[in-house]
Length: 298
Ligand SMILES: C[S@@+](CC[C@H](N)C(=O)[O-])C[C@H]1O[C@@H](n2cnc3c(N)ncnc32)[C@H](O)[C@@H]1O
Image (cartoon, rainbow, N blue to C red; front, side, top):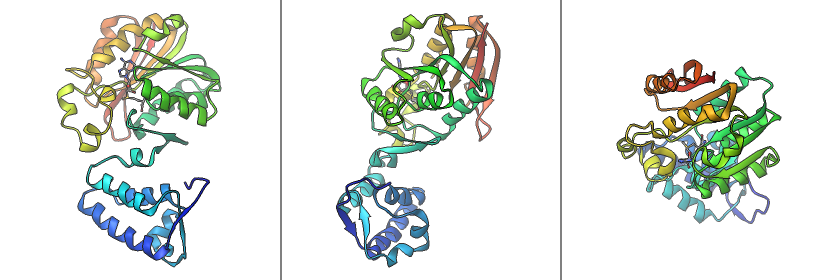
């Protein structure tokens, strides 16, 4: 989306020639072609169809939100340094929102949207105190606050830099009266909410430490390891969420997390061992992988 003060332009033919060239570079680098479209859509007033049909080449001018050379440099950083496009343009779509992102936060993933859908299915008219632990960009908190106008959302993150991004997203979506943000580790900053929460939702770090280093360069070199690394077995933070939640949830309160595919049985085992949950269920993602576990506080 083009910003308000537009001072830069390029000719349609020049942009079209570069687009064709960049698509070839994307193919060679095994980057999805649509990323070139996204980049140009984010920094100029072109739409995807006019790029794909070549109509843009007939325009005298295309308006840009920054100098053309800067845009070429962004693409080089995508290609050579494998920086995620979302960080380069500073935002990402997630559910119905446009969320700001920086290198301080995980780029919210499409599968995490399912956590909000699960919550809506289970509690169509939710109210009371809802927790988003490890809020990052604020995606889950914003999704919950929008879905549940009668609920109050409490969002925690250890990273002050991440919370700055989350607050900015909350403010852009006019939800700051509905979301409270806290800096600290998991349950520590919300002690005052003990026994008063309807639900806890979390997408915690869950990747085993050794596996983090094997992730795609976009992830391992650019996304915050605080958001990824779940300790030796990947379950360090999930254990904290399993063990702490019974002190915070009301009876019948809901516990829901995202995890790494393959962790389902281990997480169910932790919940069973804690002895404070019922209706423990593994839920698959769209690709059929065990991706979420939900449970109810006894
Ligand atoms: C996988 S990211 C999820 C971010 C966001 N909720 C999402 O779904 O896109 C995990 C988040 O947990 C936060 N985190 C890591 N350790 C934490 C801790 N001890 N206490 C609170 N948050 C923590 C990270 O900073 C990161 O923002």
